[in-house]
Image (cartoon, rainbow, N blue to C red):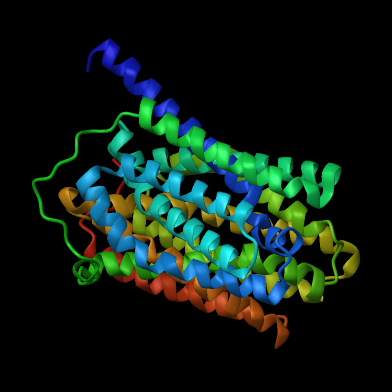
Length: 402
């Protein structure tokens, strides 16, 4: 590679990280406030708003097969640009919504755009990378996106503190602008290889018949369930079960964002000597220990609840920094290269399934305070068994970062 090509490749990769950071600033600005917008600005009841947003989100299930074919035909970079446009349309839909129908359409557009994004963004990152193993590039992306999401959250908090509900439409406008800027950066400044139209795309069912890839999807769904329950159920548990201080859930989530934005690549470097499937098993065991310790916080004296909760919470962040880049790297390494777009789009069903199941697990707090954590311990241990089977199917040259 010539010096000029290296410089241009470096600029392209910087533009990619900037674009993904800008995108996630917008996500942090509005996504956590979508239900608040539907209730406080559109004027829907909480039950109606929740039903409309959930119903719109169901459309995301239909996206992965379409996203895989689009990535195969157009290239993943153009699909990510399209995802930005669709998500901007969803945000504008919230601004224009006058009732439940408008919220339903807006939520559907956001769900479709979000799924298009996740089904294609990691293929695009792999295409734009000069590295053969994807742990480090995926970790960098995770660090940038975590920091950007936290910045969006902080900006939204300041805006709401200063302007109250009147600030919500302006946050949506800012969200639309971030999607537009991200799309422009990706379209103009990010370089990816030409699209190879030589191989015919395969369908989602064909991917599911690949036993080792199916094992990876199942493993990632079980691990994704832990992260989604942590985000959704952590605040419920801390406030309603542990009777903790009202500021503690936000502090724990801020800790996640802060650690995620600095630890990603460092953890990947430590993992390089180990087999990928062994690293996944270690991360799963960390998740199991974390869930068990979260349940044990119910017997911790209230005077030491805050430091104890903080110490336990660090474990789930550490586990995520292990499993996120390693599972992502395997999802890129296992498929035939010419079919990678379809395989990696299908891989997103793991996280869609986890997002659907997480609210039901969180609802178990109404039965017993320890029950959701028991479910997560069982899920993590089951993931270890699936990963052991996966390790027996993955060739040694793919089970190590090179």
